Image 1 (cartoon, rainbow, N blue to C red):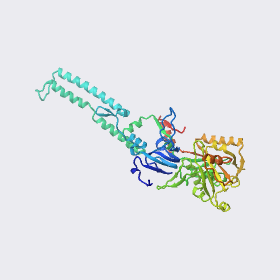
Image 2: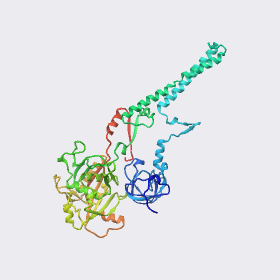
Image 3: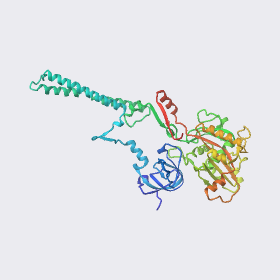
Length: 511
């Protein structure tokens, strides 16, 4: 068939959709073809980590629980981060997973109680107490009116305006009148006005509620259960620390804005959480520049402004903080493409725990390229302009096993060129300690390594053979540590809840 672009509202079951990086899945679909596909399902699961998808159906193990999001399915409103795929649409509209969630939020149906819906299970504490009060008032009114009726009949009370009405009929009218008068018709109105006033006060505190009864429920809450990713945090992975050639670096700024923040020596503090003192800046240090250049060359993510003017990354969420860090230092992927062309890539996998790329100079005149290259890399230690260079990033413990050397600084001069030193067991132990130190601060740590290659023969076609060829005798360039920062005001909100004797519980799948 012919590939056409169509609005999501026109997609029906049985259609075949084509997915590429940056696309939003228009409908729940079963994959019929997928290549290195990764999808962000934070909308469904709350987890910011991208999920790998495949068109291969795996046999389910006996006793294994059913997965919330199967590997062979992509779901509506989720974003494609990397790879490409084709899928067969199986559910659209309100039948999708997102549609079912929306139906739960808007549904007012419940069990039937006679000819009316039974809403007792969803009553707020105030509604329960008002129900009890109404029952008590009803019994008390009936009891009092019964007593009045019996006493009136016993004493033969008569209507002073009409002597023809029997006493018992007159007392029935009196009893019914007293019963109606005993019912507080104005109570629901008073409660509604009080709750409406509460809603108005909450709006002034920037709190919107869909149902008026939520005001009373919110006031009686004693425990707050909250998600972490995207609720307590911004849902934007941000590089905050780096380590290269045994030097520590701090990175300032939040979110994806490359114009906010910079790189400074380890221990430096930004006065306004964004800008470092000029004496502390290290964005031209050859060690950190070499680390960022190698990491950017081993990434597929991109960074650009959207239509609203906000900086938005496209691609893998783990690569986004690396691209933003590079942009803060003026190292853009588009600039590096003028010097290095990618000829091969080994995508990240759960078994290898790393990703690798192979680049080569775009021109044969390497001397001219080096002269035009404006970034102060560690040219004396490793040859970025070798005939071919492999760049690798991934889990630190896996990459360290493949490294035989590393970049090491000679002295405390931040502008000095680092040199290459052999990877000894002692140095490896020191690096693992640094990884543990960064991980203990709730940071996600990636190691970056590279390997200059003089062999220009054809690379192996098999992915595993290509991986074994590239990922050996690596030079460790450094570590990049990122975190999903907390939202502004979260600390104060948790503190206010604690002062109000409200317990806060964080529910997350990261731990």
